[in-house]
Length: 255
Image (cartoon, rainbow, N blue to C red; front, top):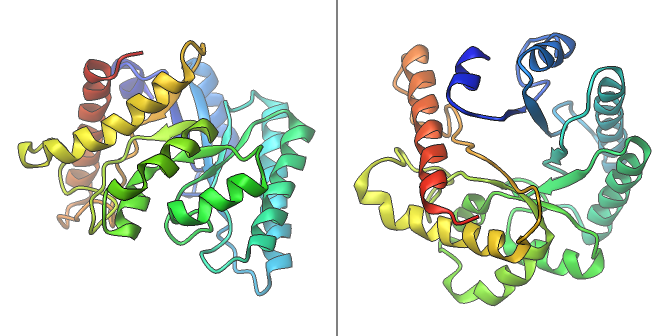
């Protein structure tokens, strides 16, 4: 946590069940260092039916709500919900579940755009925004670029309409063949970085003069990161790319 504070971050994004750590100890550390936090989550347990899946999701969200009541609340929860094969009816059921839990605990619940989930493509999310106008998104557009094998050049109007549903941004930079660049700092990728940044700037402009807009520099570990075989080295590479992106956003985005 010392390193996070010294680097100038105001908070962390946390997946409570992503590693073998007591969640209560983590929240206490966040309190100690006066860091804000957001939660990113998905159902990891095996579900042999969609009804079981939603029961597990609700159990997990209730756990986060009770944890917040005991200590302090996250800014919001980003949920990677469902699967790519969920029907519109299944997705609607999940969204209604999230809204119900959101109202119960007073914690905003967002749907993260992500491969392997119902929100894996612009073409799946846009119709749902029509069906469920209160839809709220964490936009990780790198996944959409990868899924469509394009930068959605021919879908900009549809993308712009969805920006009003975006409440948080994951500033991961992907490309047409993958959801994360090998090294975002390399000059060869500067046009791709600028393409992502242009979308984020449009989102910021749309929301001005709102008091709070949040972004997470979300460059992930292996397998997102090409592994070197040295775990310590890979952790350092991941840290440096996220820090580079944090500084890049501070220099290039107009807030």
